[in-house]
Image (cartoon, rainbow, N blue to C red; front, side):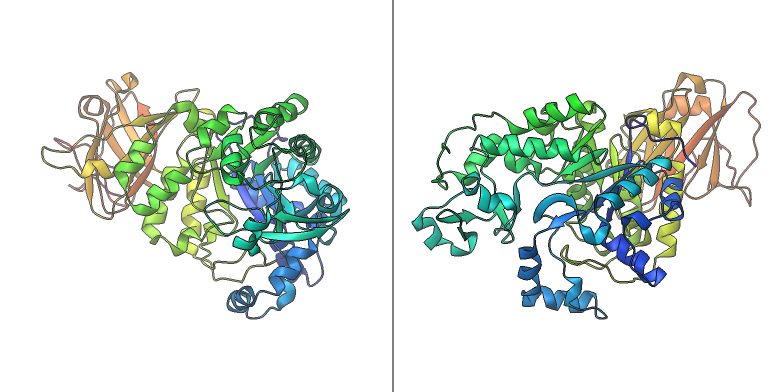
Length: 540
């Protein structure tokens, strides 16, 4: 059992995203009876703690509007997707979008407030904090505010309705009102939602109060599409689309919503984590407005593109920004990474992300190699045969990086050097050295290209002087032995196949006891390696 939860006790936390509906459906199927969040036991949680997860992001907890369920059950396209993904299911598996929130109250079907509180307590006993959702941009079309306060929402004029009728819906409450559906300006509207108008002075106050109330139920929130309510982005998106009283076209009289909301919640709950799902280059700006962490989608896009130089350039950003970035290969809104990358490519990308400063996000099913693209409106996922080799890799990776050096240490970005003149393959290699409080040393090296690559990794560490240095690869259980003096002089030579990788635990010895090895840098069964004249190869 881990120590009691202490938010902020690690500089580089780990977050596991699990859909509450999927989790309870899986447990119910296993038990042969209905299970709620309150029925999740220590035996269900301990495996998460054993892999070093600090936080569980439980999605789909809040009460979803009935309008969302009706809308999606009436969608022939979604029903076709449901039949493909869950051929053994029915339309009852379509429960609506977790982003169409009718109330920030835990859904009765999941055990309500009591069930959520019980789960939070059990997670805390395992040393794991609870993260929930906050959707600032919109609410469900049947949220009570829609009829009670229709002026809080974006309104179109007649010409705008005629030009795009699907972007609006009618509400009859003390008159007749047309309200905009929520949207990202680059995509069609989300037709089960109602767009809040942050230019109305009551809206940011009401949403800040909702955030403070959520903070009593959990240890942090992921704020969905956080950049959409930045003042300039909001005004650009909705300029000319409001005729509601008390709404002006200029900036909100409240100022930047996030500045006030994050300050208010942190004043009341200093350790509460605010995590921003953000895009469009707004990540650093949101960090400055009070977010503890923000999405690092640009890194994922570069990894998917296989552009190693672009990855290296991205990782040269300011260290403070790096430490407050969420590293992810997938999240609930996107496709599965196993369906987008080859197994070796995924392993190399996972190593890079797991050994960067910041927060590591893993999605439920990712480490088992899940591939099915399941719509967010479904309450369960299909049973897929696990990829045992991938699962073993992730378990090794997560356990190896769950130590003091990675969790509370400092990361040093290393620039690989050309192995010889004219060889530019070192540009495809990413390397990082981690130094723990007591000088524990860890080194990650990954080739982000599909072609072989060679490089020298500079390791200018004075404690190597006159020492024998052992490098234990914690992913492959192979050990290499090098002269500390050679490492100081030339660096560590690596020769990696396409998407090859190492995760070294480095130790030093005063007595240079050596055993000879073959020319490939490996010995027989014990995996030790010696340093021959010149630099030997170190292959993944």
